[in-house]
Image 1: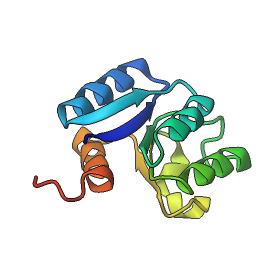
Image 2 (image 1 turned 120 degrees about the horizontal axis):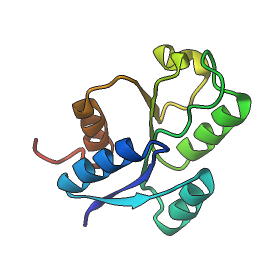
Image 3 (image 1 turned 30 degrees about the horizontal axis):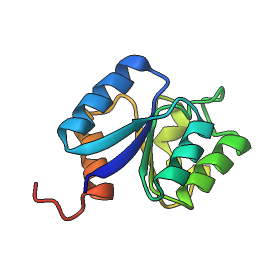
Length: 127
C-alpha cells in the first residue's frame, strides 16, 4: 500500500514540483485547494500526511489565532508539514503549535521536504 499525502499549496509551481517529487517517491498524492478540502480528504483517507504551503496568512511575525487553531486541529489527526516564507517560521516553537506540526522555512532545500515526508509516512523504508 502506498503512503498518502494531502497536498495543499497555493503556489502552483511549488505544488507541481512537490506533486512530481512525491509521486516519484511512490507516495499517492491527493491535491487539495483549501482547508475544507483537507478536512474532507482526511475523512476519506484518515491518517494521511498533510503537506501545505497555504498557511502564510497576512501576518509575518506570528500566526493568527485562527491559523494556529486550524493547524493544531489538523495535527490532532495527523502529521502536518508546513512550508512558509513568513518570519514566524524562524521560531515555530514560539507559535504554540502541536508537536506534529513540522515547519520548514523558505527558502528550503527540496530534499528537506522529501526527508520530512519520508520520516512521517515511510519510516521503515530503506533509503
